[in-house]
Image (cartoon, rainbow, N blue to C red; front, side, top):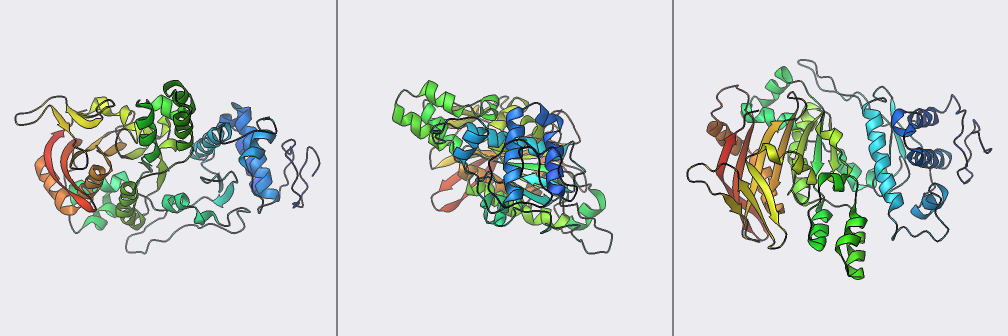
Length: 439
């Protein structure tokens, strides 16, 4: 490779990144794609992210077997010194997270017609190139067929990608519309009614960030959605923790990303329905979400408020609002307008009693899109919410309570469950309050 050009015959030499090749070979669609993405509006606003993208893509295309390390990126892309330590400086990880978001934005907007998409899997800095999976078309009295699959010629860096648990998880989709439609059908003709009367729409399932709960326990502070989106974890740790050992623990804690078994249970339960009806859905972690996901798509939000800060975007539109007393500490739901027989606060008791709010409401910007919230005071109560919304018996009871008959669509609603927590056993629950919401 020369300093400014890429040869038409790919080289296996491991050479350092110099300048982005200006004249990609016509025979190399992945590199031509990289150039289009790097020239898009989203990347023109950030030289750092553009250089990051070009560096890792060039490495992946020239030598698919190579591995790019954090220290290498710090020095080669971001100009860090030779003693750069990624365990102390989160710059590369933060920029990688931003790069993943920019790539998602590109392929959801300017790049919607691109036949190949670029992804950077979690836990790696090496991109993969794969064919865009087209939506499945189902004709009456015909067998659904998948329009495309990953092609071995479309990628030079896909080997081993399915060994990543998050990629495997993202292959199992869930869909808000299926759930909502289930609320007003709830009978043996679910499949026929879905295919006959429902237009599938793209949905995001946003899984909770389990490490965030531990981080907030350490700093005694609940992050706002803005602080969470911009990943102000190191700054908040430095500001609120005076003990250097505690600061180091807090910093290291937020380097890693985990979700709960409850979230996986939701994916498992609804994934079967989604796969059956071929409805496009993305499963993402809360840390990879952004406000754009909540303004133009159907969304399912799962987990306690402290593990999924995006719930704060919808709290003021609900009657039962999630609260957490950092000093006590205790989680509870605050009843804004108690009805006769209802309590002002529904306070959880550690390992014994909890509460879960299930709410269905319109997207704030588009009433044709919806938001489904399954949020407990802790993981066990959220699990009860998953059981409630995916069990026909409970859905039928909810429809009766809401006054929904026949094929009528369900109104916007919220339901509060009281959960009885038992160690090593699924929680039992009961409905304690509900509302029909007006917007």
